[in-house]
Image (cartoon, rainbow, N blue to C red; front, side, top):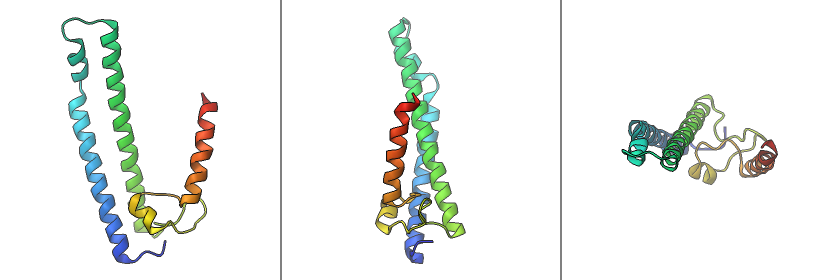
Length: 131
């Protein structure tokens, strides 16, 4: 575990729990409001292919937003598990401590800044060739 005091760890844990609660609320709200509301709003009584395409695009956007929120919730739950098992604050790639300033901004961070930079460059470079 990184060299964090118990007060620092408690504060980060509280921040993670607050973020998770907020994300769950956003997911619930998005799912409650999604339904076919966009379709009804844009199609109305007269449907054309443009309106239909827009409604489907909005539904896809809502699904993408919920997917991102669920992904963030999972990352938070994994960070909380790392706090419990004592591995929180250690970079998953190199094992070095993740700095407190980074954890305060991104408390679910898995990697130190150096390893995260390499990870992003590696994955962003691989993404276009996958298409």
